[in-house]
Length: 159
Image 1 (cartoon, one colour):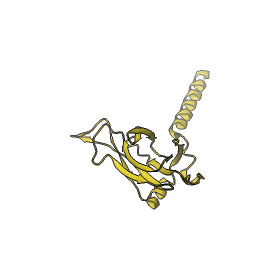
Image 2: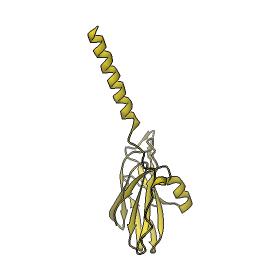
Image 3: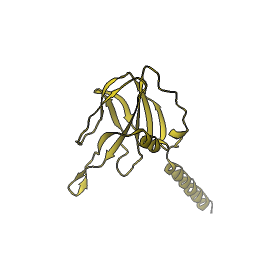
Image 4: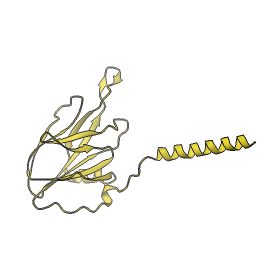
């Protein structure tokens, strides 16, 4: 009888542990609830965000500005980067080719740019390729703010 009780306690503890593991990481703070400082007068701001789409990919991918790594694309997260005004080439690292992978923008002081990173699972015949393709998309401000509202805020990637 004592063995049965220990076994049932172990099963209950394991089930609880499994449920806790399935809960995943907390989604807080949601981007909509974060009070951000205004864009510095001598800088421009770029927001990078990506939906949480586990059926496409949960892989991380580097984001490059002018061929230098500047941030990392994280599923379900928004991050920001304050940069000097100027011309920028934005690229998200992808092991697979995707049409129009480079975005070119000119940013002035006080500008805000919204970049959505999309992961697209590649097809290879009758099965999925091992790695998804990643791409950066420039999104209009109103649409981007609505899309980012419930995503996690991952913070600032520096200046």
